[in-house]
Length: 163
Image 1: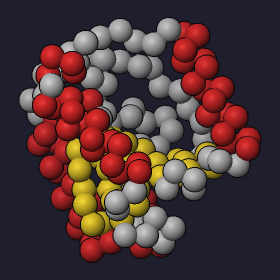
Image 2: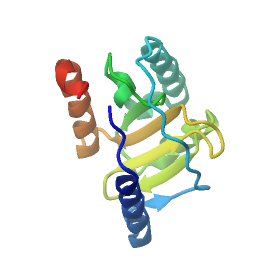
Image 3: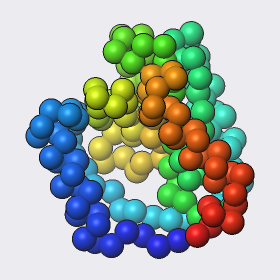
Image 4: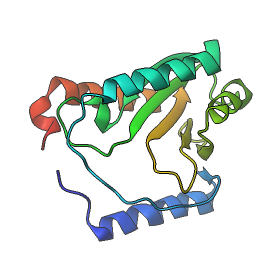
């Protein structure tokens, strides 16, 4: 698997900065750049997701309508960043008191609020190696649909996932 070029990474960072400047995305907390590392598939990733899912379910309660393993560690057999991506779907994304304090109490501060996309992003604090990314989205929304569809496509087509 090939990493994006330095120019592509720079372009993506500039796009995020433009979204933040325009108010489309609100970046929270200290900015910290972590190295990008790809590792061989790890059979422990699904179990690690299960542990995180259970902690989130216990903390958030019924506000978490659905909790799914997404991202590259959710696709068996492919190299990935060693970061477990978790998608939490909630009934009302703007009802942040229903889930933000619970997630942050587990040690994952909110790092971005994308109102137009109906997405909130939480991760390990700055300065701590990234091992967990939590994406909160509106149940039935476009964000939820696209990420689950992409994951399911790669799971069903392992030949495409390894490209």
